[in-house]
Length: 133
Image (cartoon, rainbow, N blue to C red; front, side, top):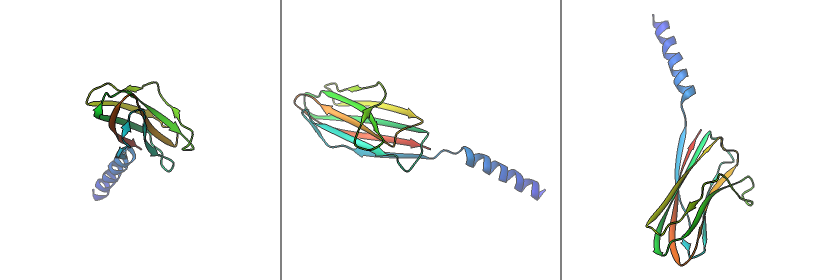
């Protein structure tokens, strides 16, 4: 009876272990976006493999007339960046602007949000990143 109970516990623990997901979260702040300046917030994934990544950018207007755009970009060398996906956050002249990108089966070693301002303004970007193995 003890052997049967031990076997069942072992089987259940193996089943739960193989289906468990590891989730990491990070919050990163970018440089202030002033007028037509830019700010990048990046995440290097070179040493890890993830099944799902989500980036949420939240940009808070500090002053001025807030305008510009934010895109999600990817790179394998950290120097040459390409926009991925077809969703762009167009900054509206309001207190906060936010967008969430979801990347299934990430194919690149590095990702970043690239925010560019426009006009006479000042804003601060923050990225909330969730990495699922």
